[in-house]
Structures are given as structure tokens and as C-alpha cells.
Amino acid sequence: MNTIVRGWLNYFMSYCKSAVKCTIQCLNERLCRWVRHKFKRFRGHKIKAKTWLQELAKRELNMFAHWALGWKP
Image (cartoon, rainbow, N blue to C red; front, side, top):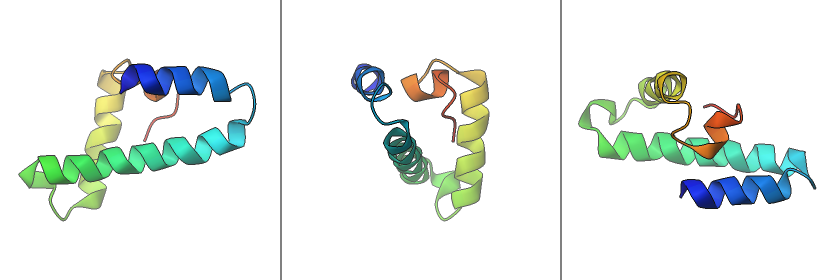
């Protein structure tokens, strides 16, 4: 997924940055939803899952291409 997102960002960042922002926000929300389904301790806790993703983004900056570019959750 990371290579697809990186290629997509490189292409569309030169055309319409505002559309990219909305799409990246949707991607971050989808990651938060995945965390809530993957880990039992986050089920029903949207804020805790988002906080955990934010801490992960600080520690592992290069995990996702959009995090490395500064589009953190």
C-alpha cells in the first residue's frame, strides 16, 4: 500500500493539493478504523485509537508515505 500511496501523492501533489488533503484525511480515518478492529483494546474507543496512531506516527515516521510528508493523523 505504501508504494501506491507514494506514487499517487507524487503525481497529484503537483495538480490539486486541496483534493489530496481530503483524501489523506480519509486514509487516516480508515487507518484508525482498522486499528479499532485489529486490536481489542481499541474497540469502541475512537479517540484512544487515534491517539495511538498519532504516537506511532511520531515514532515510525516512515511507516506510511503520507506520514513522512507531514500528513499525520
